[in-house]
Length: 519
Image 1 (cartoon, rainbow, N blue to C red):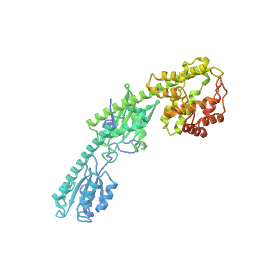
Image 2 (spheres, helix red, strand yellow):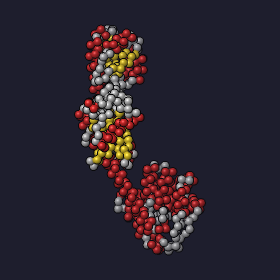
Image 3 (tube, one colour):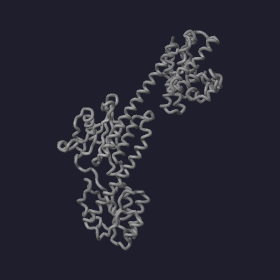
Image 4 (spheres, rainbow, N blue to C red):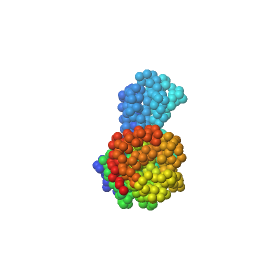
């Protein structure tokens, strides 16, 4: 898998800006330094002494506080402060030391580097402070010349950066380990959620988070969806930036047309998502600093895994589509055999789903129940035509034959575990609430809820539809029959839910289709 990085420097110079917003080579972030001292002159001198400071292509951003109380406010407003230079004696003789305790204990901030500066070393002896407080350095103000201050700050910032990397590595590893058991369970959530999870993993692998200058990262994932390249996941603010459209087009041209990416940031990377040696999407990231070869290798591997997961997702969708086609074909076979029930299975699907949702079933689960209900009468393929099409009442012998369509259907569907729900419906949809149904005379309350729902909606649709042995009933007549059967033939709770659906008008159009079905 190739990783497409920004164009060479000579090409970069030809593109000074993208969407007129930024210089490609200009630093985008600073190191935040908190200077806590009750003497304004000391704070000013600190700024002057460090005015030309730069580390890792970033300058300093000074945040000042004249007391420990002000410092707490600044720390709450700026959780990404890298270094705090803290005076000991301010509003109280130990105000600075109490501030250290606040930062480490109450805020729980273990990353910010703390340097104690004091003009009264006798008040806070160096050895005592170092032994009893979680600080990183102790300096007498008299020894902090400009050069010593530079050295102290550089060491502190470098330590902060390294700790951030370690912490981000830990978080990234936690993300990866947490995602590993679930990343291929693709039928449980939307594709969008899946890709958002992918992007989170990449952010973790880049050793970046969204809370600090080391941790800021812009990124996006796009794939081909119905012949269109659609954005699937992105960091919150990134997609709304004016330059996003230009970046999107650059990535498309780079991945799908092998054109050089000349207008991206210096550290930007474009990773293709590949299925069967063909690009199907891309991952675009903007790290702040150049990624190491180890980082790049990890992201390379992860992108390949993402491509494989995407392929699995597509295969999963194809399997589901094939399964649903198989259900439809079996249902069509049953209806072809029993022409008198034309359209019945489609309506039953709709009634079942609507009633299940009314009973608090999740829509996705209700949809599966509706699909399974379509096979409730598949066993009729084994019932002789003369019985199915008989215009009069069935003889006792003929009724015994037609009752067997329940076990025939269960036997047909029992060959594959994927049809287990449909098998249960086919076997039990003629059982009754009072246990007087067929074939087994089981109390319906002992059966799955879906079978009790199908029992109600199957009878309702049969009553309002034409059959060789009867004319269609009116909706009101059918409604009365179903209501009267609550507690004897039908589960009362299912009847109540179905009546709610009926009264809502949700199935009116579907009911009208039943009235239009004639021999």
